[in-house]
Image: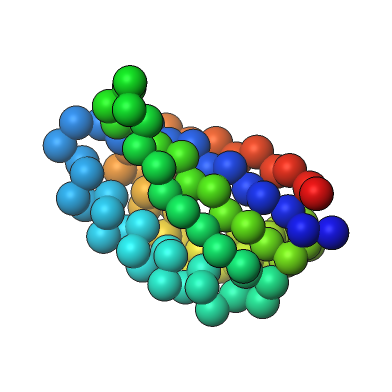
Length: 94
């Protein structure tokens, strides 16, 4: 069953560039993962600094395999450190 993952982050002022580089690394690796279908990044219009990534996967299991991988965890830890908070995830199935 296909899954959509909503990834929410609040980006502190002045951290956009550094975060952008980390997100490009993460997106590049994500696109090579089994079960990955697509993804898009949205910036909230009425609240600067809030972002939403919508990631589509063939299954929740494909997503879990990727989210628990060492290579992803290393980049994600850098992202969370940079923004000073844990990234939020919501998992939805079709």
